[in-house]
Length: 470
Image 1: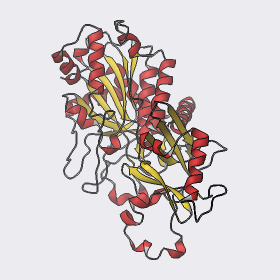
Image 2: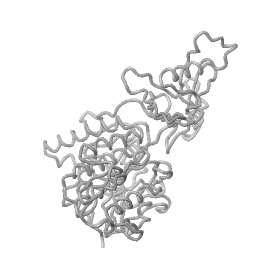
Image 3: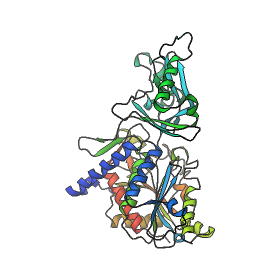
Image 4: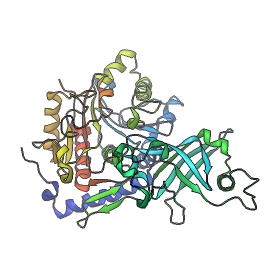
């Protein structure tokens, strides 16, 4: 089966639509460099399409009804949006799920230290990265500091024109003969991913009498700018991410280069698929679920393994006088889901690890559909059943979606997972779909604008046309 290059199918008007959607996506990507900032954008976009905070209904005992559109904010780090259909919820929902966390470098609870006249932030990396890729790059810092009195301080340094940036130093090539004999996993060690915070001693300090004068100066700057003390880092979430906005890539302007496309490209296309269907009168409830912590196992209160989503569904059912424990279980079991996460794009320069015989997603050939993920014999995978895939094929083909089969790579070359298996454990039909990336988990990842657009088309068709598979 030969794939189809999506670019060759577009009229000039369609190509303009592809480019316009990519511009909106790049703005979302540039502003949403953390999961918290993605939630802020999702809320703002949703409210523009008529969605309301579910708490406005639940806390005031206002019953929800079919065609209401609400969202649940989970600790400002995950969000679930519901367009309630006319069918009872126990009959199931159509769910688009993606994650909004991305590999990054986090500050430790006690991050500041001085060594030989330079002040550093001590860090711990988050998610799977090639550590050497994060040195000698301009970096930005985003996050929150929460003071003991509950004051919430927002931090965003590096992406405004007048901002300073940060960097993790690398060993100069002239002194690297020993370093370069190490394997790639150990060229840079995790404890060496420390970020330079400053180099000027505190004013009027005598280095022989004042301990750590450069650190003292950095702390003085933080106190003046943000009103925080060193102990306040203990109740902070501060993330180091690549500096700079997402950019169009290639002379033909066909691609996007940017940080965090795993998995914010699928998060954005899922979100907009739901919102752009807002004027539809739905029978089956449509859901967009954007979660945290996928890169470290979907754990924690905002990860897919938490009870947050089930609690939200139960709350809606209760508001509509449909709730009991069995109905909630059936609502999940009778649902269908696209677990929307990026897939590995075929890299011609490194083709030895690509899945052979047309099973590897190619850039520009549309949405990737991944029947199974996992590693070592599909371990840890949700392996979707044929009946479900057949129904998806018809929905996608009838909607004119360009799509392609996808795998994570050559058998035994590696592997990975998504949130699909977690939702499948509730009894629902789930399959992974997503946009192919080059440079996945690198500071800057590459996607194709046509694949992004085909994802939007596919997700809209799924929400509108999918029914429970018998």
